[in-house]
Image (cartoon, helix red, strand yellow):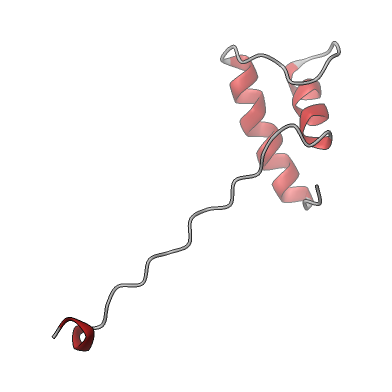
Length: 64
């Protein structure tokens, strides 16, 4: 998985929040939630979800 530094930090921080809330780690190992989240992102265990594409509003000519 090829992601830039910003995406890595965002994914890891979102995953840390899930781990703090009680989610099961997806990698084997010990460490703080931040370390586990980083390992998960690096291992490709945290899926990256692209935002939905915006829907174009129809032009008035298309409606008439």
